[in-house]
Image (cartoon, rainbow, N blue to C red; front, side, top):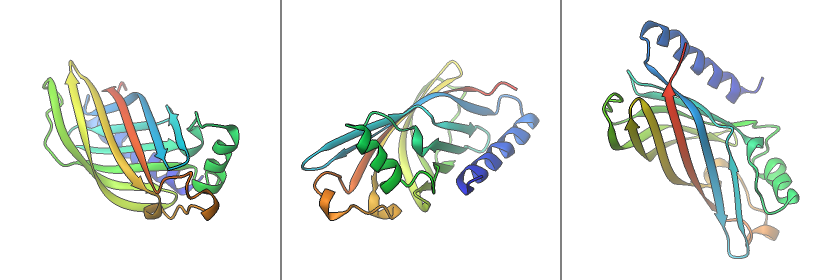
Length: 187
């Protein structure tokens, strides 16, 4: 089993064990979509995935997310998708990307409203871990939590190189948009 998956599932196990101590403490991702866009001078590349898994523990505001790198679809062509999997994200070597950390602001998940928060944690893409603070808009309504965020990922920050022959077709900065729906985890 690859390291990112192993650590992510260990983290999920910790959530499950501690959640048994306090019922209703864990929010589980029920549905989510991650989109990315590369806007380069000669080409726009778009792909998305609904393969994201994740949890938020309300009591200490910790979270863990994992997405299989091969779950991204919607490229301009099958060849472009293959290049993403094989040459850039190296999905066989790095099967998942993860984000684990803590919500900085205090959030009362029992109160309806819209909350602008920051998620601070370790973003692991292509085997390179970077500490990130990502702004997130949370909407809480009747025990349902929706999260929305847009942020940029610099390819060089994660040791993803762009060959000179496709430099004008792939942006150095990728815009990532995340839409998530959570519900209380059912034991």
